[in-house]
Length: 362
Image (cartoon, rainbow, N blue to C red; front, side, top):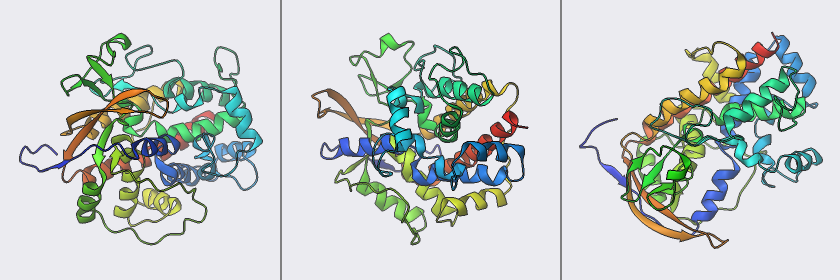
């Protein structure tokens, strides 16, 4: 990707609608299709195994890993339909559940470490570790601080195994007051005066119209598809797209289009047919979330490669909070390498989820 002569997509800032776009980002990380693709891959890889039987025993009739892979996002609102009593109970017992989906390690670092910069006690690595322990039968206050039931633990693992392979859900960007990506040594340095938290890339904004025009030259057109069972959301009038949102959903669409697939099931079959070389995890399964996070950190460096910060602006949330956002510039061909990365990460997520469940239930 490195090419100093490569044109940049100049990304402009706009206030109108950016908060709505951010809300959509937080709602469906990796996107509805992305999470279902991860689950669909795992469903296929588990066929005929003891793990498949153990998973079925925890799921309701008609459910599959593909179908429940979005559950942990659906509990955040009503875009998947009315909240079920099970969802209400989960949210009530887990008031910090929205924090379970990510960690904020500076993307320039090489590894996730407990209590390291950007980590926290309820982040994605710690939550996965706790949920895996529950599936192993280790249900103590120390191993299960969230008091997950075994079914809840499976629903959480099915989702977070996808999230942790989204590079911006692990590798975070922090911006200095002079507009550079920097590495804070600790949380205290992120003071919103000298170093700012980009909120996982939500405060780094792309010009949506330019992105659509550029991707139209590089990505095959989307074929018609049946979205009857896909949650709908109000159309945003924003002229910008958060960098995080781009990585949550836009690249999933691009990856599926470049793979000539329309549905999560088709993508799963495509993934398995290509016989991907997915690195196996090693050691105690409770260390696997750390291995996945370290892999995502490496990939997040590629996601930020040749990406530059532009002009800053201040916005005000509906609650009156003032915060900074920045324009972003990415290489003109960015949709191509980024969608290739997304395709690889979705496949890793499905394969790693299946391998984890096989290891828990051999």
